[in-house]
Amino acid sequence: MEHRWCKRRRLRLEVELTSPCGTACVAHTRDISMDGMFVDVQADTLSNPKLVHVKLPAAAGVPRLEALVVHTCEQGVGLVFEAVDNQDRRLLARYLSESGRGSGQT
Image (tube, rainbow, N blue to C red):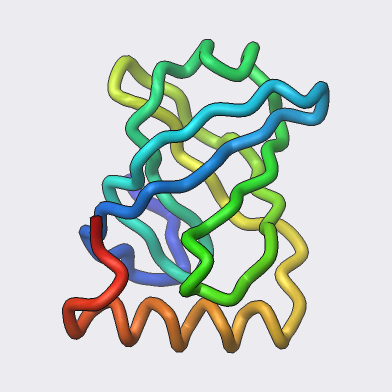
């Protein structure tokens, strides 16, 4: 059973994930919402961190988000955004709204 606060939208974006020790990789989202995302990436790519930094496309206007790894599977990792301030939340909402109209997809 899913326990999400926000509905996720299928959207393929190129993102950069960085672990606390500095290991980074480029991956693609499968879906994204205001509270998290699923990223197609090998779960062990970042050495199984509990927390990662997420860099969204520049068009999002959100510099970086912290995310908690809450799910791992063969296909990727499920992330929940942590401590998103009001300004970044507004920027993310606007970006997701605009991406839903066709911009920002890769």
